[in-house]
Image 1 (cartoon, rainbow, N blue to C red):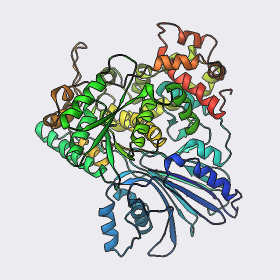
Image 2: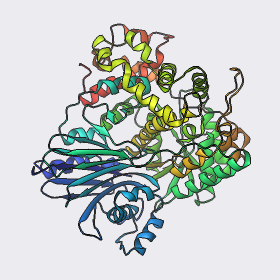
Image 3: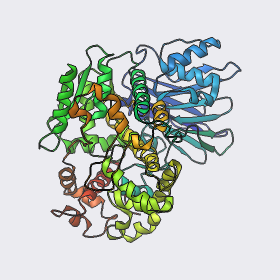
Image 4: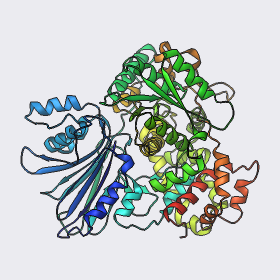
Length: 605
């Protein structure tokens, strides 16, 4: 993957930022693209690119400037991997297009020049793309269907800007680090750094997964027109049993094969779970001398993930490299602070610290591309505790809004109903009872089907939780200049899952003591490739000692002081108390405190 950045003035306003300042902003994303850097500019616009070279490593300098068959040019900055670029390239060549490289980024650029936004519907892969039409003064920004690759933007009275990282976008326009209260409150509940299009920083927006944002700059004031170019498929549930298994086996195999496209070495991240084991087993048949990497260390206790990953590596006869998270050159709390300072946003799950350490191990081994199992739990139904909750919610609520309120109060790090006892009055007033968070959750549930159908909540997991998960994966790995690819988060896989009956995805028995079935068809489809211990292994998270980490961070004076405008007196003492019922709150609070200290943001409304 790469790093994108750009700033464009509207109307007759000329670009008044020195090129060396813009270049400096671009090069602060060196970790996203250490192999090459480029820029395109005229009197009103500047677009920059940092490149991590994966396809055709010696060529592919960007941004690409492509002449359109009907006249005019398109300036295209592409970030990600276009997995079907050879197929698209063949179609373009048949129409008379020519190419200078074998880079997928050029394929995307030529496709956009020839087909415009219709090209997005032909793209398969993970990407963020920005293209500018100098003749019409129109900028377009788009992201892949699942939001694997980040892209942020802002529009003011005389300009538009975009970047791959929030801190770069803020620096590009000297935007004050003023938090958006609605998003801060949503972060306390969900540990997601966005809420719809809004981000933690007031005035800065994210391009949504599957969204295209057009920004017209010909007039004095920019005009923004967003719309969704892709929406998740509707569930038909027409297939069950062996027919469902065969469909899923084919879809996952083909997706993994597509994600192996690379002109540099590809490895897998082997966690010990069934998802990464499936992908590694397929890759082992297709990649000579495949290497796997596993994070270990955890909370200092027994590490069943490590045991399961080792079992799988031995089963396939693969070389396995273990990266001990607690014994890297950078201690976990120091790594945590650096990650927040560099990215300009708080962390989501504590696993980000482990993923970043693991990605550094991958990079030190000379590997740039890593296959990971993220996405299977959200798409196939893998979180047993959440599935039990949504099954209960589905039986008791009558509307998506009721379902959203009940669900958020059941699964949040800090439930909306608990905030009156934790936050200062001015914060409670500013968040409006988490109105936007509830509305976003309700829309996601409603888009999946009736609130009384447990399957409807998979759409909530896909549209909200999965987006946050993939964003965290991208941030943590790209900080180490490693491209993480999640083959489960693929539009063809989503199409296949939509055809599978709910009972072949998950089953939640009415007896709370009975074991629920999760990712049923996925396990059945690949059982023949896996040891029984792996195929039947329940979902398990990497055992980070996040409570200890968060407590130690909150005990740091500067972090605790930064939270004073947000939380009521006594809240931190209650969170840090032994056996506190509010122990989960330590993690998002500590992150917000670190965010303020490392970026200059303030929680003082």
